[in-house]
Length: 184
Image (cartoon, rainbow, N blue to C red; front, side, top):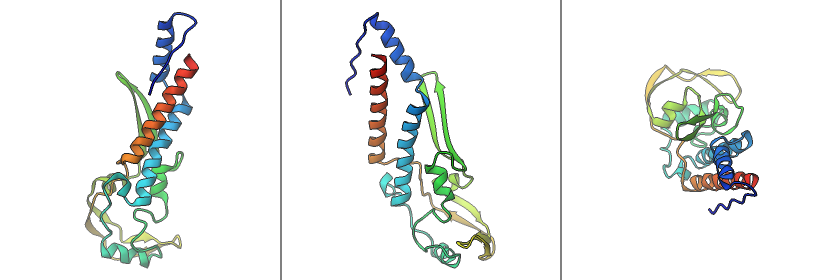
């Protein structure tokens, strides 16, 4: 990326304005960056982790059976029954969706993802308790067996793959180029 700055006045003033705008992007610029990130999350759902380079471990046979009992598809798509969990990662404004912009001493930080209580265990893996009452495709709760503690393998949504990282880089380049045009 090449940035050319032109100034009809003191070029240092233009440089300072450019740096200030990059340090303090507007809402539209932040939304473009957040959208690029959520596209990567959506690819992870669509490819069941393969887009990130870490394909998700297949569902346990008991889980497949319970899903079918509840009226959902058996093996696929993983982590998507009602769609609420997926939406919490990929749709701005959805319940549990997070988009936080914070200025730091060295620039800025953007936290995009899900605040769903399920996110930690599904992303990192670990032991969790499975509720014996689960929602079916019919919208009703059904008894699927006694409560039990099970190990859930990690199925990270928040790891961006090479394609998503490249797309994010392209968006950042575009945003900086647009800021440079407005300042120039």
